[in-house]
Amino acid sequence: MFEWKSVGLAVGIMVGIILAIIIVKAFNKDGKFKTKYDEMQLKIRGRAYMFAFWTIVIYEALMCVLTASETMVLPVTNFVLHFTAVIAGVLVQVTYCIWKGAYIGLNTHAGRFSVFCILIALLNMAIGIIAVTQGEMFVDGKLQDPFINLLITGLFIVIGVELLIKQFTDRAAAEKE
Amino acid sequence: MKNLKLKSARAAMDLSQDDLAKAAGVSRQTISAIEKGDYNPTINLCISICKILGKTLDDLFWE
Image (tube, rainbow over all chains, first blue to last red; front, side, top):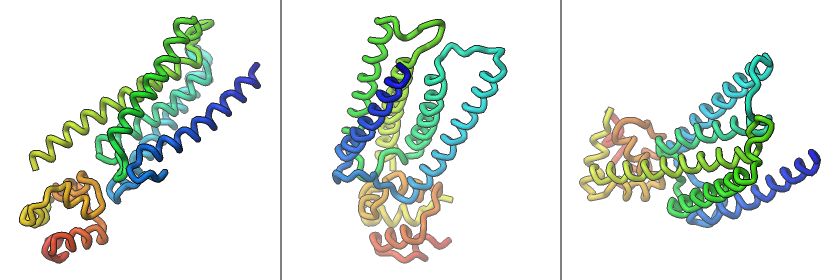
């Protein structure tokens, strides 16, 4: 059972990578896979990766302490516990880049990217809702793997809202200049 | 420190931040940050901006 789950996960990740390549090419205006950034954006992105790295390190260290002491049993599966670190890191990196104007690349089609965010959020929300209705979300007092889908839904909603606010404030700043 | 010389040179050519950014191959936010003094551009970008605005490095970037 566990082996099939691992195979499914591996296949899912591979399909995800292939889809990501196709999607990234689609929302770059020049049809290229590589998103272009200018020198200031690259500098900001470097700092954002550093913040994301330390977020994951601190989160994982904290979870090690909490789970090793055995005084506290976290109501989540190991998969959810560690995948949350990835989501936290992504959230920190993306949020910092958005507010500093380094998230949308020079060749990125912002409109298409927003639609992509909405689609990913809806897809994950649907999977999460199905899991809730089938009683697969909370088993044996622990949040199960489909909880990740709800976390990803939240992540993309936050990204979408941040992008909208940033676009609005940027437009206002451009009009004021 | 704000780069008012860059801002006035851009305005004199009737260019928006977006126009200058596109000509220099950078984002509007980068031009905005340079004008506000929030970002110190590389010499390559300084040269590129000077060429677009028909100015020298001394005119725009030397204090």
